[in-house]
Every structure is written in structure tokens, then in C-alpha cells.
Length: 241
Image 1 (cartoon, rainbow, N blue to C red):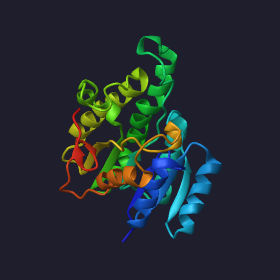
Image 2 (spheres, rainbow, N blue to C red):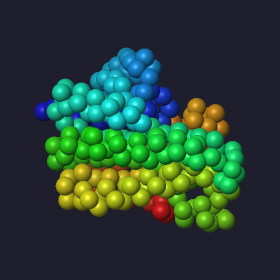
Image 3 (tube, rainbow, N blue to C red):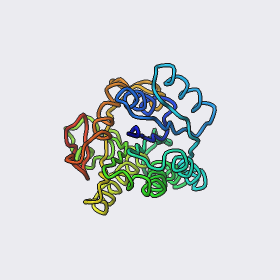
Image 4 (cartoon, helix red, strand yellow):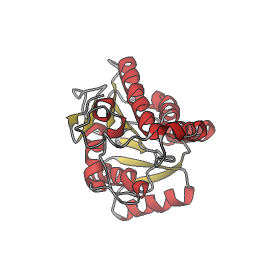
């Protein structure tokens, strides 16, 4: 029986790399997606040294040609894909008032955080449809929850980043749209909030570990055919949209 496979974007470090490690330990073959070829290959070797089957694939989620080439390689080598984790993301110029953030900076954030997952999902969907039971996980953020951001009692209420926050809200909306379209097709689509995690992304200021962050992503990535679709979760618990 062919081993199940997962492709994770932005997987050469941080939450993406730990997700790859946990999925590999669970028996999945790893496609470790990375924009930087050398860093991706180094990360794949590191997983291989742990006994995990890992292959590096170059993929820049902002580049349609790069995404199509990555999908073509996976199709050529495996013929299908069981799980897609859209993890790649950028922060942009966070420490600036919403009224002062340039449209150019917001566009740059959206190109990676919003259009990137759409581009990647559309390219790999034919391979996901072939499995009969596939999972797509959008790595979102609690900062994309309009319910939390509009609640003065919530810990994230004061984190008022226009570009980043709204990009994750948009990603959540994309999750719902794709889940509705694919309902009944055997492909589930869910969004994960990894929480405020200590990574290079935030200069390691987060209070959660990458192991904690990845566990919630892996839970969604390994759902069986009876699992939920079209939801937003933090450590297995529903997050308000």
C-alpha cells in the first residue's frame, strides 16, 4: 500500500518544519515545501536523519509557475497527494497604525497569505481528489478571528494589525468557500490557529512551543473521513470566525 503523503509550504523552519516532523513520525511521506532550495534540502536531510521519509520541493507560493512546477513534480513521483498544509505566511509591517499602512505593504502580505494558499490549493486539488479522503489545512491565526478581535475582553483585542489580521480573516473566508464546494468530494478543508508561538516570525516572543502549535495542525491534517470540514480550530477547539 502506498504511503500517505503531505505537502507543507514554508516548511524549512518553525511551525512548518515541526508539522513535517510530527507528520513524518505518524508515518506520512513528507514533501517539504520551501522557497529557498538550499534551506529546503537541508531541512529535508535533517528529517531524513531522524528516519523520516522527506523530499524537498521548491515552491514560491507567490509565483504561479513555481507552484505549477511543484505540483507537476508531485504528480510525476507520487501521482496523488493526501494532505496539503498551506503554512507559508509573512507578517508585513505590523507595528504601524492601520490608517498608515501602505496599500503596497498590504498587497505584499495578501500575495503570500491569501492568494498564495488559493494558488497552491487550486494547483494541487486534482492530486488531492485522487485519494478519496484528503485534508487541506489553512494555517490561519487567532488574529484573523473577527469575534476575538472585536471582543475587548480577548487577549488579541489590542493587536490591531490591518494587513496581517485581515489577511488571515480572508484566509478563513477562503476556507469556508472551498469547504462548501468540496463537501461530499472526499476533500475536507479546515483552518488552524497555531497560537502565539515562539518562532523567527515574531522574534521568538510567543509563549507557545512549535510542538504545541504543530499538534493542532496535525490533528486537522490527519482527520479521517468522518472528520469535520469548514471549521476554524485552536488545539481542537472551535474558534469564532
